[in-house]
Length: 132
Image 1 (cartoon, rainbow, N blue to C red):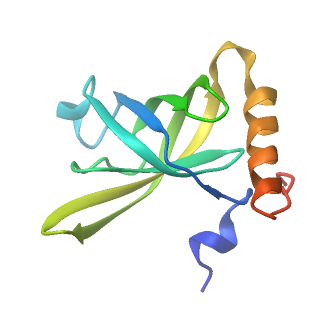
Image 2 (cartoon, one colour):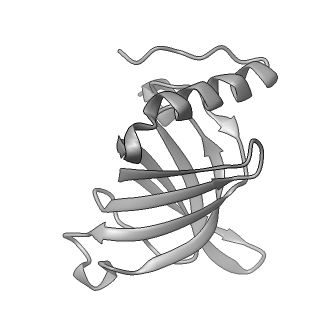
């Protein structure tokens, strides 16, 4: 049986940056559409990111993600799709870890995002993979 790690196209970098998440579409939970969450990334990659919120966000929901990087200072806006969700208990509260795959990076900034992630991977001693 393969794990989520085995199926990833890109290595991830542990990273905590501010992210504003707006749910654009959620066919399984229409009441979530239009909601905005303010949270932090847990890790990032060239093709997606993981964040944690205290609400369930179902698989296949379409999100807009405004990521505010602390270093280097920059802002990227992505559109992504939830590919997995996992609920965990932390300090007596339930947290939902959400894995998102990007489907678009706004303002044609895909290369800038990938370059930034590649530099962070190098700093962590990880080599960036190419997407199949």
